[in-house]
Image (cartoon, rainbow, N blue to C red):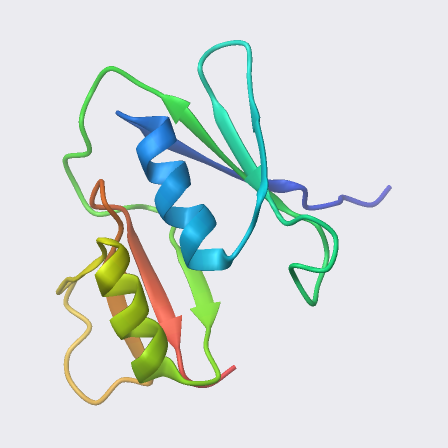
Length: 121
């Protein structure tokens, strides 16, 4: 038996807002809605070099209160330019204890979900 990774689910107070951020960040235009208020984004054909995972933003009543147990790692050819672009979309730099001199930058999205922008893969 083999498993196939199909996507990630992120709890969100405002799924549409977080989905808008991530769609712009990743350059994805595929979008749909679920029966319980979920917003699903995925790459349309030609928008990614790799497979077609999706990210689902599902509504939950409680706000984020602690550091994520799971986060996304995103590789960038030009890390500085991508970090700047993501900050203009609403991301902010965060300190999760990573220290100085790392090959990654830790950011938080518009609801505070941490993710890393890598300069090495």
